[in-house]
Every structure is written in structure tokens, then in C-alpha cells.
Length: 438
Figure 1 (cartoon, helix red, strand yellow):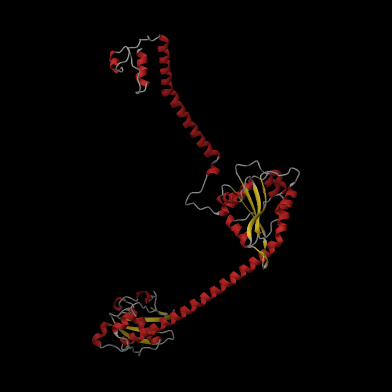
Figure 2: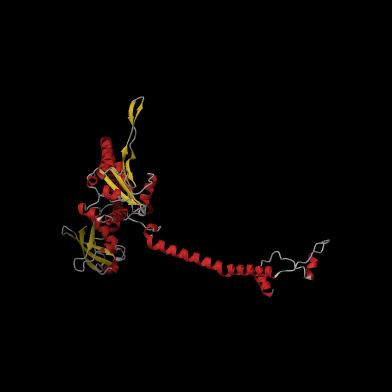
């Protein structure tokens, strides 16, 4: 009984406990007025069964349950490893910031198709149809805006057994001959999001899938007469899954499923192509006219701005002219050290000697040369100082010449227009500058 009491204290729940009638303390737990019950002796067999039940509970809690949990973890780890090793390509998806070139997707899809070509087929055919090098959106644009017939070939990497469409249709010479400048083909597998969305939109139930899309329109009768509805893209033929009729060969399937359908819609497609071409040329002409109009407006605006700028430059030079009225006269001998004697040589080989106060800036030499070139040295202006300050506050004079030294290193003073003359050894106290047109 000691072993049984130990199991009971260890694994028995702390809820309801059976009262021992032999225990005097249990008398206080009897209901008031209850009759005294007969005492039934406990048999050895009942004690043994109760002990074995406790042992089984001990084994279940300590050994069985942890073992089951451990096995579940092992199986989960194995399934993750198998899924990563054998189905890695099916589960990979691009990162949020990763951009995949649609041309790379198509090239990879075509390479995968080339890897699946059987040796017997390779001996007779060594090429695939000319798959469109771009995304499905671009291929659909060609079909809707250029009136082309679009074949779409969709595959499921997990369905490798259905090879009839690829081996007998895609690789068939008669099928490859269909493609010209007005018929294109685009392909992709379900790993490509565009192919997956296209399969859902076309309600594809079996793979591989080969469908034909083109622009179609219907004619409705109206009180004014027959009227054609706007053209829209439609699925006119499809082939999916395995071989439909065992009695048909690949050439008859190509002829019945695709060639006849294309021949049926081709006359209307030619009219649609002509309409799209006219619409495209009209749009091109309209855009060209808009471009020419905008270019003309921009040119007129530039001419007006140039005229205003030139007029403002003339006013600026006339306002500055009195400041340089006496620069061509030598200063008094006692003031010679406060002036820089600069000889200017113009492109026509004429020379002019000017005397600039040393605190003047190099910009003043440029302004004086511009006055001489524009014959405005004797000009005057009616602008007051405050008015001129406000008018020329944002104005910057542009010169179509440069001042440079005649000897190497030929220093261009255009980069030193904001420096004082006394800080330039090239012209202070004496210097020679060449006036060169830019």
C-alpha cells in the first residue's frame, strides 16, 4: 500500500478524493443525520489493478507523450528539408525589392524547354518557335495595338507527364511555319506571376495549355443599320492537357484547331490592322504637331527672354559707363601707385591702355571692355542709385569674351572676376591682357 499511496500522491489529480472510512478524521465530513455504512474490506486484486493503472499513467506521462512529440518534430524537420531540396524551384519567390527582367524569365523558360527536347525530336527539329522576348503585358500590347495573333503556351512544372502538346505540336514543323510578322507566341510556367494570372483569367484547368488570342468584334443591327462593336481580345482556340482524340495526329490537330481558326478571323484582323495603323499614324501626326507647336512656343519664349536680357544689359552698361569715363586718362604721378596700368589688345589687333584704381575688381575690367565693344563708353543713364540697385539686384552680366595673359601659363581672368585688381599680379601694377572672343 505504500507504493500505491506514492503513485496516488504523485499522479492523482488534486480534485475529488475518496474518503477513507477507517480514518477517524473522515467522520467529520459525513453529512448530518447520515447512517453509518458497512465497511467493505479491500481485496488484493483490486489493489493490484489500481496500482497497474497508476503505472500505466506514469508511463504515458513520462515516456509516451514526450516520445510522440519528439517524433512529430523529427517528421516536421524532415519534411522541411525534403521540400527545400526537391521543390526549391517551385517555392522560390522574388524578394520584395528584387526586380526580375521579363526577358530573363522568357529566356529561362525557353532554356528549360530546350532541356526537355527528346533526342529523337532533336534529330529532325533543332529549333523552337520564336518565343516573344518580353513580358506578357508587352506581348498583349502587340496583339491589341498592332493586331497580331498571339499564341500563349503555359506549363506547370509539376506536370511533366503531359508532353503531347510540346513534343507533337510545339516542335512540329507545320506549327513553326505559322509564325510570321503578324503571329507571335509567348510562353511561361506557373512560377511566373504573369503566367499564373493569365491561367486564372483564361480559366485553364489542365496543363500544358496552348491558346490563341486575337482581336475580334461583332456586328450588331441598329436602327441606322449594321454597326461593328469595338474590337476586344478574345480566346479563339485552345488545346490543353493530353491528346484529345487518339485517332487524330498532330498535323490534323494543328490544322483543325489553329490553321482554320486563324483563317476564319484573318480577314477581319486585316481590317482591324488597317484601322489601328491609321489610328497610330494619326496619333503620331498629332503628337508631332504638338511637339512642333511646343518647340515654336519655346523658341519664341527664348527670343523674348533674350531680347529682354539684352535690353537689360544695355541699361546696365549705360548706368555703369560714367564710372569708367576717365579710365583712359593717366592718373597724376603722385597717385600712380594706387592704379593699375592695363593694356588691352582686341581681336582686331588694336590696343587700348586703361588705368583702374587698385581697389576695383576684375569685373570692372570686363565691364569696361564690353562698353568699348558696344561703343557705349560715352553713354549716360537717367536711373537713380536706389532704382538701379532694385533693377539690377538679380542681374548678372554675361560676357562673350575672355581676358587672358599672352604668356604661359595663360591665365583666364573669367574665374577671378570677384577679386580686387591689386591682388592679381598679372595686371597690378602693370599688365597686358588679350581680349578673345568665346
